Amino acid sequence: MDRLRSIFEVFSGDTNADRVVPPSGFTSRLTSFTAGAMAFLTVFALALSLATGRLADRWDAELARTSTIRIAAPEGQLAAQSEAVLEVLRTTPGIASARVMSDAEQRKLLEPWFGPDLPLDTLPVPRLIEVLEEGKGPDMAGLKLRLSAEAPGAVLDDHTRWRKPLVDAATRLRLLGLVSIMLIAGSMAAMITLAAQSALAANGQVIGVLRLIGARDVYIARAFVRRFTLRALIGAAIGTALAMIGVAFMPAPAEEGAFLTGLGFVGWHWFLPLIVPVIAAVVAFWATRLAAFRALSRLS
Amino acid sequence: MIELKNAGFNYGGRDILSDMTLRLSPGSFHFLTGPSGSGKTTLLNLCYQALMPTTGMVRIFEQDVRAMTRDDVARVRRRIGVVHQNCQFLDHISVRDNLTLPLAVSGRESEVDQGNVDDLLSWVGLSERGDALPPELSGGERQRAALARAIIMSPDLILADEPTGNVDWEMAQRLIALLVELNRMGKTILIATHDLNLIRNTKSEVSARVLRINNTKLQLAGADL
Ligand SMILES: Nc1ncnc2c1ncn2[C@@H]1O[C@H](COP(=O)(O)OP(=O)(O)OP(=O)(O)O)[C@@H](O)[C@H]1O
Ligand SMILES: [Mg+2]
Image 1: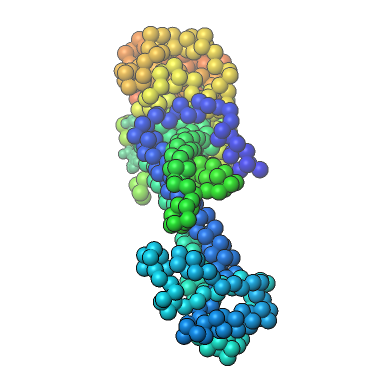
Image 2: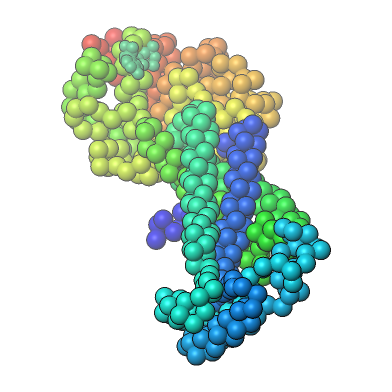
C-alpha cells in the first residue's frame, strides 16, 4: 500500500520537489538521447519480429499445402504417365486437387533462366503437376511408392525438404528479435541507473541539506525519479515516433523480395510501438528509484 | 527532549566523547563550550542523529535513536532547527527559497507566508539579501541565513554550532537576543561556542547552564565563568 502510494507521489502533488535538484542540462540530454535511441531500436526489433512471425506462419501454411510432381519421360510416354499420375492422385486421400501446368505457365517459370523464346515443344522439358493438399495432407511415403509403380518417370517434390529450414529460420529470427527487445530494455535500465547514480553523486550537498531539514527519502528520491522518468518518456516518445515514420515509409509489400518489403506493421500491430515509451518510463522509474534509495540508505 | 545516557563516540577507535550523560529538558537554555577539537560538533551531531553513538544511549523526543527508521529521523529533524558550523544551502535557489525549504519538504508549502519570511530576514539582518543566491553570501551572512532557516519551522529544539563565529560583536548580540527571545517562547536551545564573553553576557539575560567538554567528558561549568 505504502509502495503504491509512493508510486503515485512521483507524479502528483509537490512539483517543487523537482526544483530542489539543480538542472543538469548535459546528463538530461544524454538520458533523453539514450531513451530515444533505445526506443528506435526497439521499434525496429519489434517490426522485424512481427514480420518474420507473419512470414513463418505464411510459409508454413502455404508451403505445407502444395507440392509438385515432375514427370520426365520419353516424348511418347509423357501423356500416358501424366494420366497415370493424375489417376493415382485422384484416389489418394488428403489431396484436394491436382492439375497439369500449361505450357504457358511452365514457360513463365523457366523464362528467368532461359529467356522468353524457349521452344518448349522441341525440348525434353519435364511436365509439372501442381498438387493442392487438404486436411493433414497425403501420406507422402505411400504416395511416392505408388507413383514409382504407376509412373516411373514421376518425382514427387513435397517442399518439406526446403520448407522446414526456412520456417525454422523465421521462427528463430522472431525469437532473436524478442531477445533483442529484452536486451535493449535491460541496457536502458543499466544506462539510466548509471545516469541516476552520477546525478545522485553530483548532488551530495543537495541531499545532505534536504536530509538536515527533515526531508524523507521518498521526497528526495521523487525529485530524481520524476526527472529521469520524464526524460525517458519524452526521449522514447521521440525515438518511437521517428522509428514508426521510418517503418511507415518502407516500400509497399511487393511480390519480389516479399520479406524485405513486408518489414512493417499490419493492422492493430501499429499500436504496439506506442507502448514502447510507456515501458521506457516504467523502466526509468524503477531504475532511478532503486538507485536513489540505495544511494540514500548509505547516507546518514 | 534530548537525553544522553553514558553515550560515547569514537572515530576509528579514538574516543572523542565518552560516558556522556545529559538531559535537555523542554524550555532549557544550554551553552556548550570546550577547546577546539574537543567534540562540541560531534555532541550536537549525536543530538539530531547525524551520528549514531558508538556506546550508550541517546534518546531524541523520547525515541531511542537505535530504534529509529530513516523516516523517523526525518520526522524528528522537522522539530529540530540546526545551524551548522559550516552551513550548506541549495546553491541554485535564492536565500528566500532556501529559508522556506523546510516547510516545502515537510508538505507545509501552503503555510509559506512571504510577510513572515520578510520579518525573519530582517531579524537576521538579511532584508536586502533575500533574492541572492547562497554562494553570493559572506560567511556571516550564511550563518544568519542558516539561523533563519533553522527557526522557520518554529522547532521545539534549536541546535546552533558557533552561530556567531563569523559575525561582529554587535550582530552576535543580536542573534543571541533572537535565540533568547525564542527561549522565552518555550523553545529549547543548545549553543556551542567558545566565545566566553558571549556566554557571560547572555547569562545576565536568561538562566543558562554552561556545559564544557574536557578530555572527552562533559562537565558543568560553574562560577568560573
Ligand atoms: N569524520 C571524522 N573522522 C575522524 N575524526 C573526526 C571526524 N570529524 C571530526 N573528527 C575529530 O573529532 C574531534 C572532535 O571534532 P569536533 O568537530 O566535534 O570538534 P569541535 O569541538 O566542534 O571543534 P571546533 O571548536 O573547532 O569546531 C576532532 O579531533 C576531529 O579531528
Ligand atoms: Mg565544531
